[in-house]
Image (cartoon, rainbow, N blue to C red; front, top):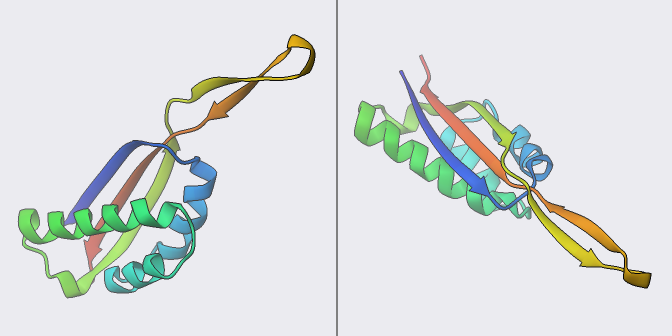
Length: 111
């Protein structure tokens, strides 16, 4: 049995999220929460909220034991890119790509 939580269109680049996801993959849920609380990255705030949601899904929807949960898989996909223009010298314009992410977190119970 697995519990899943997703968040879409988060305004943070997928590369930055992937760094933090590598830290919590295959960790117990309580240890993963502690890692997210004490890591100074922008993605940690979103991932902490997502992990809380996945734990609540496991507890309420699937009657899983919260103390035996671990992060089975977590991945990030690139969402739609917001394209913005920055004025530059001599009438030119440079494009700024503001990337978004779709993040998925899957929890399972230890055997």
